Image (cartoon, rainbow over all chains, first blue to last red; front, side, top):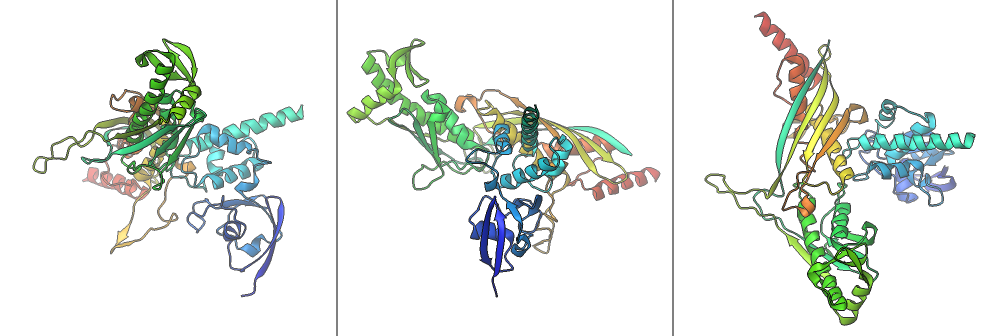
Length: 164
Length: 331
C-alpha cells in the first residue's frame, strides 16, 4: 500500500514520517517516534491509557488513524515537562502518592491537563468526571483526584501572583 | 424512592502463603561513600515495596533514605524473595532486608568499636555517624567503611526470613497456616434507588490493622485501591461464562469502577505492632479489598430490609428482589 506522508507537530516539534495509512496514532507515537510514555491498554477506546491531547482535545490515540492527525498538534506525556522541569500535575502526582503501577498515569495526567485547560478551578465532582474515561485499577482514584486539586491550586496561585 | 443504609464488614486475613514455606532473601552492602545497596527479588508492582524496603534498610543502617539504592527482581543479581502475592512482601522481604541490614551494620559497628576502643554493644549508627551513649563518637561511617575496605573486611550482610508455619493436618485441617494475620473493619453508606435499582456508595470508612505503617501514604493508597476493587466486586463485576466462553471479555462489557463510581474513602490506619514483623509491620494489600463488598451488601440490606445473596448487586437484581419481596407480602 502507498505510504501516507504524515506531517504533524508533536510536543512542539514538526515531524514528517511516511506511514501505512491504516496505522493508529498510538502506533506512530510509540513505534515510529519511540514516545513510549503513551501506553496501550485495551486498544478499543475504553481504558484511556493511550490518551493524548490532539489540537487541545483529549483523545484515545488507539482510536485515531494516523492520517487523521495530519496537520494537527499532538501533546504526549513527554511534552508536558519543560527543560527537565516537571509539570505542576506531574509534581502533584508525586506529592499526593497518586501513582501505583503507573500504567494509567500518562493518560491520567493528560486527561487532568485537558480538564485544567478548560476549567482551571474544578470541583471534586468535575475532576472525577474529567478523569472518568481513564481507568485505574490500583489507586481507587482518591489520590489522583487529590493531585489534580493540588495542581489546580498551585496554578491558580501562580496565576494570581502573575496578575499582581 | 431513595433509601439510605449503613453496613459493616469485618475480616481477618493471613499474611504469606498458606501453610507453605515461602522464604525471602536479601543482600545489603555498604558502598565506599557511606550509601547502601539493597538487593531483593521482591517485585514492586506498584504497591510501593521498593520504597518500603529502602525505608527499612535506611532505618536499620543509620543512613538517609536518599542514600539507599534498591535493586529488585533481577534473577541475574538478586536473591529469590518469592512472589508479590499473599500480601507478604512488607512482612517477609521486609524482615529479610532488616536482617541483612543488621548483619551489614554489625561489620561496621565491630570495626568502629575497634577503632574507637569502645564496647560494640553500646555503639549505634545514625545519620551517617558512629554514636556512643547518645552522642557522636567522632568517626563517620564513611571512615569506618574505608577502614574495613583497607583491611579487606566485607560490609555485606545477607538475610533470609521464612514465616513460622506448619503444614495442615490432612485429617483435621489443623495447623499453623500463617505466622501473622491482618484485621480490618469497613463501614459503607449507600443510597438505593428503589425505582431503578441503582446502588450508590456514598462513603466508606476503612480501618486496617497493618502492624506498623512503614509508609502511611502507601498504606492509604493500598486501602483506597482495595476499596475500589471492592466496590466493583459488590456492584459491577461479574465474569459471564457460557459454554466455556467468556461473554464479557472487554472493558466495555466487564465494567470496573471509574472515578465517578468511587465514594470518598476514609482510610484509618490501626497500628498494633506485630512482634515478628520488621519494625512491627504486617501486610495490607489484599485485606483492603476483603470486607468492602460485605459492608456494601449489608448496607443495601439495611436500606431495603431485603437481603441479597448474589454479587454483584446489579440494578436488575435489586429491582427483582424488591418486586419479589412485595409480591410475597401480598400473598
